[in-house]
Length: 471
Ligand SMILES: C[S@@+](CC[C@H](N)C(=O)[O-])C[C@H]1O[C@@H](n2cnc3c(N)ncnc32)[C@H](O)[C@@H]1O
Image: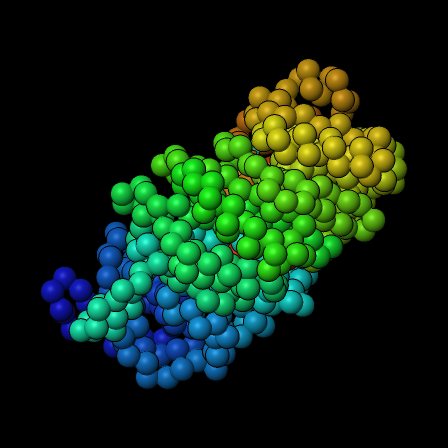
């Protein structure tokens, strides 16, 4: 072990694991964990530590003695700098194994749960170009490589359109080809960027809060429909219409072309008026004969193909016969509720975003589903005695909370009313394990199934079936 300022150098260390936050894991000779970003399990490396926390280090591999046989060549030219698909350098079958293991470890170590035999994780057939929604940002402060910084040459164009660089709020990595969304995603983004540069549309300056072009949101649905929403920082009718007309002419296949003028400090669209320029103000997603109307603010699972697999597993675990009252908590736009409705007596969905609930009601009408009801509000407030009195004792609860998991009062209320069956869908198995540990005295875990929705990243979805003990 050598010392360099406050940093430490550890030599010949094997990388042993991958998991939380997309980082890989090695151990220092004293047993302390080192989290790394630029390695794959099986690599043998020298490590320079950076940030030291109490119980672990953050580090970087500075020399490779052996490359792991779990490695594969990243397909994306931006891999090294982007940070969006951190696991691209690991063969997909190994990515799946680490995800499966992460879920299992969380359920056992955090939840102290007794698990049934674990069914293998369900991988994606499509490991690239699987996202239906992408967001890109403009900046006149393109992130520069070290080579560019050290070069003597003057950099005259620092306009960029792509992704934020982690830890540098004002820097954007300029992306020429992203492997996450099908074509014409890249063509549309590059067209807008090039048009902007050629026609003097200033790119957003995040420090000074100035410029015109701010963000692009691009949705391509499984039905092939395309939505483009361009966010401008200020009003400039001439330049805006020039761009939108040129885009519409170049890509006549765009179903919905919309824009926003947002002069706020942040670029979230959710509190903004979105203005239709051409086509419809929505596109459609379709799943097993159901249609879902998707507006610019609607939530829809980002990987449509795997969402279908996830919902089939959920429906299968719920094992409905047509006579059950089902509560679908954290229902979003009511997709799971509608997906299981034909197998249930009635389904009640709850969601905090009122616009999502409006979409859910509209979609249920569109799909001629009459046995679903939707309510907007925070779960911990809505799910109370009068709610239960109104809708009846549920036979099955399906719950799909955000990454933070369920509020403890929601868990307590579920335990109080004790439905026979609970299907818990989660995008964060650590909080899922925490919640399940609160339920383990009353419920047995019957099945658990991990589903990969996001290849090349560490994210993983997990579905657990619980049954009331003694039922
Ligand atoms: C993981 S998404 C699930 C969406 C839906 N089940 C689906 O498959 O499309 C979680 C949802 O919970 C909603 N949500 C977050 N916190 C909530 C709360 N406290 N009460 C109710 N809904 C909440 C979010 O708006 C989001 O739509």
